[in-house]
Image (cartoon, rainbow, N blue to C red; front, side):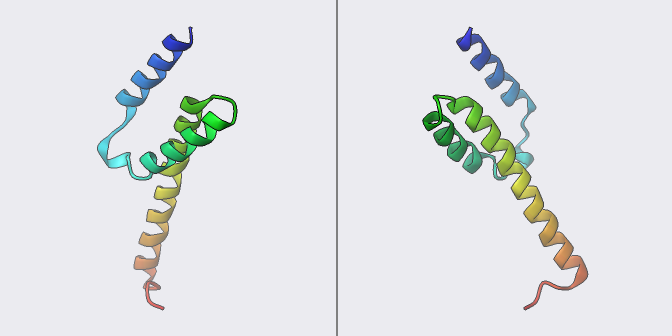
Length: 76
């Protein structure tokens, strides 16, 4: 049952990702996978959550960077 669940999660992850949206996912997946492994052998769940969080942070940073460029506040 666990193998089937893991394979379906992996297939869903492969089908739903795009190269442009991978920014932040790799680093988040590594950190989340390690944390999930040590927090009760839930490495796959941690990796998925880490990937989502990494993408969220990357989008936030891009949004802030674009906003400072538009407002002209990019200088110190």
